[in-house]
Length: 141
Image (cartoon, rainbow, N blue to C red; front, side, top):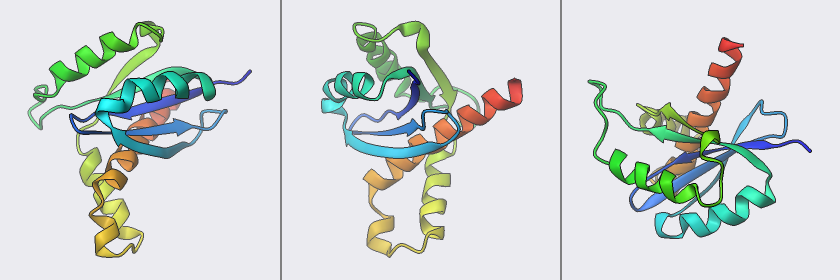
């Protein structure tokens, strides 16, 4: 049975999710959910979609230093280990993904109110993280 990859753009309030197709070629924005509901949502999603790998954005400042949220992300990863193989959790640099997501949303021609929807930005950001990760695998193959 084919598996899929899942990307997580973790936030303290909201978290964006993105998923690949079964061939792991394309990344699709999935959903943005309240972070307080994330673990419950992931338990169901991982099984339902046959997720074999999770890619979690690694926020860094322009200088390369980790962002303050990194401590929360580490705790989140530890909580995943209860129901997902921690060896299949990968981190990927997410610098500028929110800015790229906002620019791509603007380029779609959506009305200003829709473009300012932070839930949309978060799931698009997760999709960018995942697509960049997939491209890095192809480059390294």
